[in-house]
Length: 120
Image (cartoon, rainbow, N blue to C red; front, top):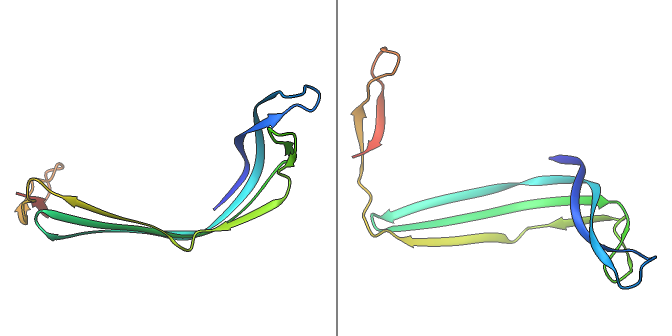
């Protein structure tokens, strides 16, 4: 995925006014490659477990600016990766989920009635 001229807000100092800084919008380019996986598992009717993980490599280059402390910032290509980003979740379901049961559902266009899985 590529973003050209993406904007972000930074706190930038004005060298002509000592000890003054303000929010400034700068633009830059980003290039992101990777994937994300989301898994939900319900081992029993009252417990839900989840996993979300991502692997991502990104490069960004934003225009140069003066940071809030008066130091030069930006203007250089930066890269980052997320080889170990993950989230584990658990939820106790107070009301057990009803089992999936096949049912005939009327088709809205009056055609044949497809078989769908709907919670009872």
